[in-house]
Length: 440
Figure (cartoon, rainbow, N blue to C red):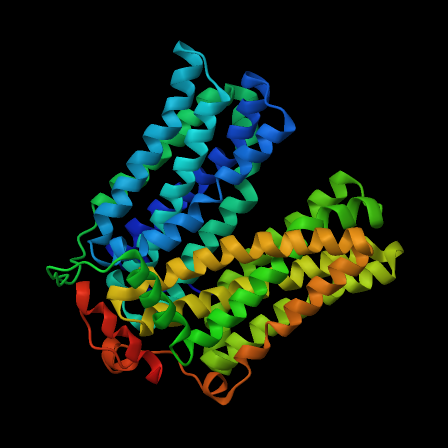
């Protein structure tokens, strides 16, 4: 484990880190407790549970598509505070309704969808705010710490929620969840970092303009664009795993539910390790080489699934290897890719570029899951999973270029952000000039 480093003495980063840690656990509580309440208190059927689950994810696509420009044109800290407080009110409305009125599935639908939208908006603002709070050479360290907290929340959040529900009931657990969002908002409110002034114009770009700006800022940049293509293909292949991984383990390989839970838990531990090694790998091998290596290793770990389908008697071993190797490597890649993106893209287009990634994930992952289902029906679950692994390996191709191999981490002494991407800074109507990104 790398030393905690100088960021632990950075007051505003520590506040942001603590806020995100609290918020990450709160998100897991919401995600786990809402279905429990739907089953126990409302008597939801499988279709209603499926709708409830989708409503926590689908709004992220709309937010990524339509809200990026709003975030770019406004101060980020108030957005973070407002989304936390709104999530607190939404979550608190559930136990309030359970105690004093008749809680309905429609109420839970509204809460799940609105909390999902607020969480997506929080992520957009957070990704654009971190480069304001810390220096560019600190971004890998900062993102690693934030990812480590998120990994711990992913590992421990559902278990803690289960204990709280068992001991205090689900409605009381959601009260604790609401308090966690208020605590996050208070921590962010206490931050002192001044955001750079935002230029305003009389004309505000349309939604179409905002989408075009996000596309050109992301895919138009010579390095960031390569990572966007890699992530997009990875999202598509990830849909195959989302749709069929559990089915493959339980039915094709004959793994019992308890063992599968342990195997998946190994991925959470690996993700935590990946958060700590990202910075060390970039310093040891170079930033670009570390990005390529971590992504290649992460996607190659999918071959363990192919091995499991060929040797089902060793299925537990192969799936465990895949979780231990793949999750950690992909988390390390995500930290490096997001840190570079935050360092080189102009601050006034950051949220629109990150929003594009939310849209890609929200569209391509379900598309991959649908394709996996069709292929599995026509052939077999094993064949469909092998196809998903093959698509994942292809995702490495966009990164294989000299520009990425020789890439070094940006530092504070580098050229100004706007010069790095060849774009004049500015907001509002002048954002149309983003078309110059990367020489496009």
